Length: 387
Image (cartoon, rainbow, N blue to C red; front, side, top):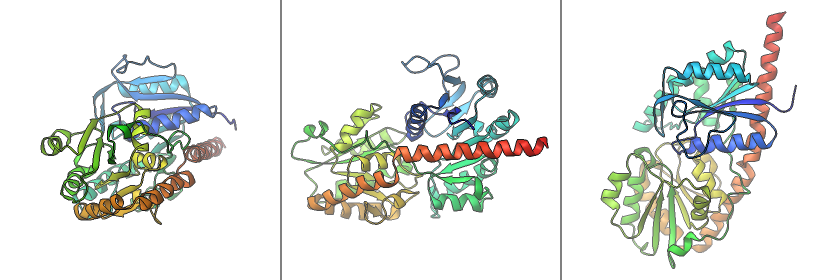
């Protein structure tokens, strides 16, 4: 079997979210390792939405509506996809699932064309009987029959794997491959951003500003905590709840709202200057922004949801109860504020944890192993059928 593959990647390039970062990072490294990658993504029909020109190995899929959380393809998208796959004839298809109706028919399309298909199932989950937990459980139930038709399913934690197995997704097609970070690019270092707030500690949130992210509780905990007058809370991102929260907390002088920052170098600079990174989510899969902050050496406070608690186990960060964010977060921030030695310890542990378990190089090597396993299984099945 050849070492270098032709990979058709179906993912996202906009709007900016963790799925966009995941697709970009994995495909870039696959290309660096010698694989030929064709990037399929939803964009305006026959035109490109961004300022960058359409790349040679880029396939645009027409759509009706696109948001951070889901996409509605146009009726022409299936034909465009099918025709492109026939022309390219890839060795394997990898879809970074983005909550689209197309997700459910991709296995059938690929198998009709004789192409094995792998997916990454990003969807957040929570085993607690909360609103967000119940909603995530419904999404898992909705997706499970379709996931069972893929040749390989990538998820981020053992808890997630057991949940899918209970929903009759075959255990032997599920592969736990956590998100990976380029630990050579995301590193501790000097931060120009720190100069904007001299003589202050900087606490940072980076991600979507949506209700499930728990920012309202975080903001209440921060504004009500005593002794944090010399702390600047920096909120990086945008979303459906942004205007509402800014109308309530936007006048607070110790809170800075940056909006969405697409430039990765600027985000790295902010993370390098962060004295504490806060992730108060009510539901998660495995947060890329959490791993990025840890790789940059930021001390972490995060809720025990999705796989985030596993990332921070054994003292790599402060884990708080998602049902008690206001009380637990206020206490955690006070401890971090008052102890530089503790912040320094958490900084070292966070960086080491990412290097040991969540490097992008290890991630992609495991993805490659899954590709070759699926190809061998596919070739074996074809041989058995022909006999």
